[in-house]
Length: 269
Image 1 (cartoon, rainbow, N blue to C red):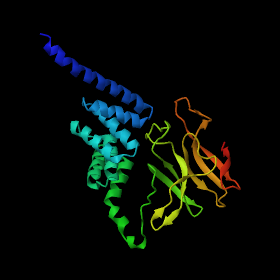
Image 2: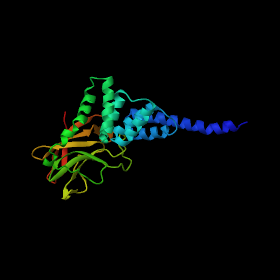
Image 3: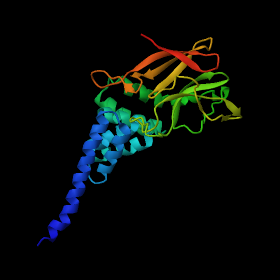
Image 4: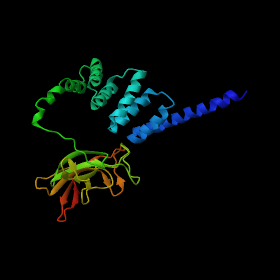
């Protein structure tokens, strides 16, 4: 007589566990801890089908610049009900990032059928339709992707002392993790050419610019002796936040010392 109850209990426990993962995923998503959000959502979605959670999973992966995983979850949500509005627009963006231009165009056309005046969707669709024009006369230039080993992501490169200066992130170590991506917080690094299509290992910018939270991107003054960079608004170990619990980036200036390191940092008013 008790056998059906015995069989049912594990299933109820699994559903309860999945719902708790949904709750944890929503909490992480709301505070923009996207790496944790995707972890919890994917654990939950193994056991239950929740379209809203699928869409949040897709967006969270997109925020982490993981277009492939984002596209997977937009597609899964689209199987339950067609994507519309902003969801279709974001799906189109990740499809475009993956080089799936025809599929992306179909998403933008869907958005424009609903919202004919959507300037972003129209611009993205026009870009796809006219993309072949960008390949005309490409023999004038040779573009080679830059590979810098040891980095999870880099951007905003600028010329620096015979090499480049860039903002980058690595795999998180020592418990210091950017909740947005699960990698390290951004710092400023340098690299120099070390041969044909090869670059030196990235080195942190010497001095006091790289701190506890986000630092960069940056630009140099024309004389190369002043550095202007963005940094998270923090004091010592405390991250300053506004009334909405959001920490804003601030603009700073650093000066090049005689020893080649950057210091004397001042925040712009």
